[in-house]
Length: 479
Image (tube, rainbow, N blue to C red; front, side):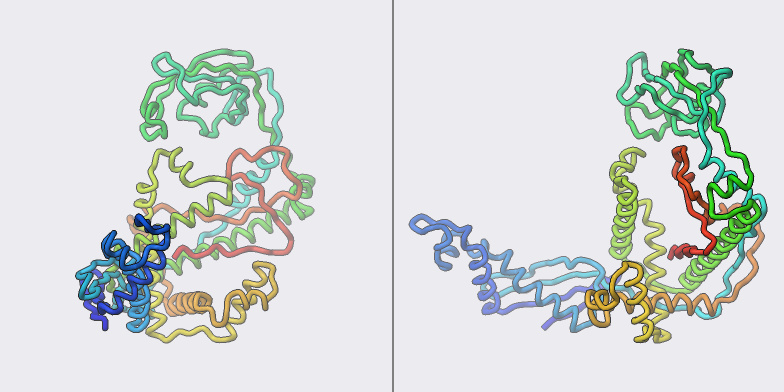
């Protein structure tokens, strides 16, 4: 029989006990599990009788596995019978063990109580970014840069925008430091890929010149030895290459897209940017609606839930970086940040996510939101298409009425319910709104049909694709 006591911060203490007979049976199971480990003079290893093991080693040698034999199934049963929504690992405290059996307390954190405030008809500012001709022109210019070529320059000094091939070696207090040397390195001036001041001092020098520059490493530089340090670099320029942009005409359009004229390309870019702006406005409205509803809600969020979400976010980021060929640990080491510091930086967003999830679940329960059989079937079919698998195979792998799938449907429908009921208002044009940084819209780019002959200078210049048939993917809401 379990005794459940509610404590502070959504913690619950579960007091349980096992009789001497139950504990004795668990000791026997522990003995059978570990008997090959025991060795007593006169007996072969693994053949020492139970009574002699207890006499020779003491009964305590069997306690750890015996406790597991009793505690684990009892814990699972109590959680199920009392419908406890546990969000942390149980902490075990043994109160009594031995002749009178086993008495113990399991302390867990459970999902907190949520007191909803107003969630229907909340007022939320709504605005959509206007796509201007300058935005289209900027995208066209990015396309030209992605398809530019490099040509050797011999009759002038290096300028910003040029790519120079250099040898360099860095010195601190007259001594060369590790990682400060490169031969035949291609550096685009103005890319800010080197420490501040380096590229600026290469500008103005000619092919064949050998010269020295002085720089100061940033205080937040990843190397402890070089943080905030003054350094000198000896440099030699071997080559200067200028970026040549293609002519902006119909031939360029045919070469880089599936359109025939510049007007067609511009029209497609504008349409894509308008759709991106609409999606951005929609997602911002969803996030703001959840924020307002969450502000109206009373809930004390347990640290365990936030910490769990931080771990999830860190794993998500590591997986994303891995797909791009990077390791999160290596990246953190490069920027001089520990994993603990990185995880702590995720805490504010983790708190928002946890509260939003709790609010959505509470609203879903309040309005009795459910996933219909038709919606479930459509979700399975959508997954089958996404993974290019047979629908029947996906359904079999998921099992009947997969709770995760149903939960996602309910969650999505609840968010739609809240945003449909929300009242759109004009954004406040006050000082606070003006000071708030504008969120950068990831507008869909029109892309090359042919591979560019030039390497992308940075991640933002990666090629993208434009087709006459619109196949845009809406940006996901950051909930």
